[in-house]
Image (cartoon, rainbow, N blue to C red):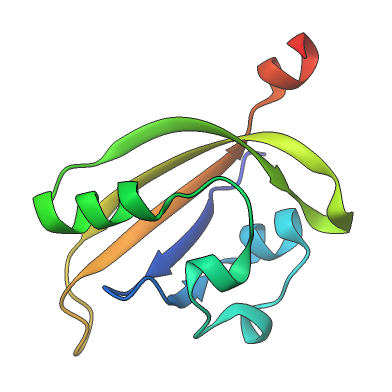
Length: 109
């Protein structure tokens, strides 16, 4: 079974929500990351310009390939996609990020 690994960020790129699949893949709980900025959450490749552009333009990005530290600290290839989503409550600009382990890149590299 394939589970979508997702997080929702607010306009200031703070984590509002992660799903259980995100917790399992990255080895963190929602309590640990909720309220943290994306830059606090993980060092490494900078997704912030893409996300800011997504917020400003309403466009999305798909399958950006990065190497990210997953649960246990192991760095693995991951594909990241992002898009704006409709407002929830008082939050008017939100971005949904989805993550997928890039098994093909892992086998090739």
